Structure formats: structure tokens, C-alpha cells
Image 1 (cartoon, rainbow, N blue to C red):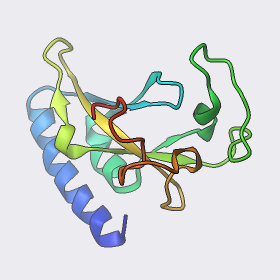
Image 2 (image 1 turned 180 degrees about the vertical axis):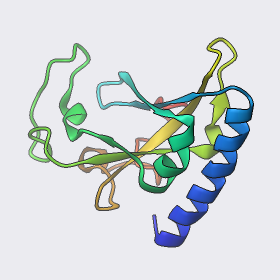
Image 3 (image 1 turned 90 degrees about the horizontal axis):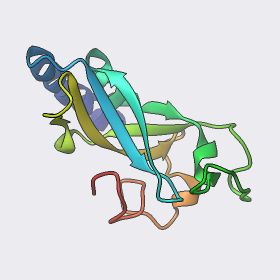
Length: 137
């Protein structure tokens, strides 16, 4: 994501955050599906949505080697918790949750902190995660 794209995302997320705050939304759950097919989540306060849209929310790359039972395997690409993956909220999917007052949801896409795709997601759609798998998409 280039600087101009990040600034556009920031501006749009700021508008969305204002709209959500006015509706009583205080937190946003960002979800992704890991390589084992397990849905994971991180949350951000609504006021931090613009920052999350601009730079992403940090996630350890160790999740790429978790198995369905939360045990771990190894990979030549990911061997531990070093590095940083960034979860970028999909503002087109931002949805207030009717059954969870005060919460909204957005799927997220993953990139590395160096603006590349996650190493374990090399065959992914442009969003960074495998197309058609979880994370709402």
C-alpha cells in the first residue's frame, strides 16, 4: 500500500469511525483465518480505526505455524514469533454487529511490515490471504 493509498484509507476510516461512534460502537473485531482454518481475532477501539487502516494492527507471524489444535509446527519461512504481520481492516466489509451492542466487525487482510504478502500466503489473492477462505470472504 503506497503512501497515497494509506492516506485515503486513513481519511475513509476516520469518517467510518465517526459514524460508528455516533451509533454507539466502541470496538471493532478484526478477523482472519489462519493456515489451519481457525478464525482468529484482534480488536481495536473505534477511535483507533483510522490508524489501523493506515498502518495495520500488529500480529505475530507465529500464527502461520499453528495447527487446528493450537499446537505448532515449523516452516522454513516462519520459525518463531520474530517479525511482524499487519492486519489491515477491509472498510468495505465494516459492519455493526446487531447481536453484540457496541461492536462492529471487519475482515482483515494481512501484509508484512515491509508491505509485502505474508510468506506463508504466497498463493494468495491480492488481499494477502487465500481467496475464498474465511475472514468473511
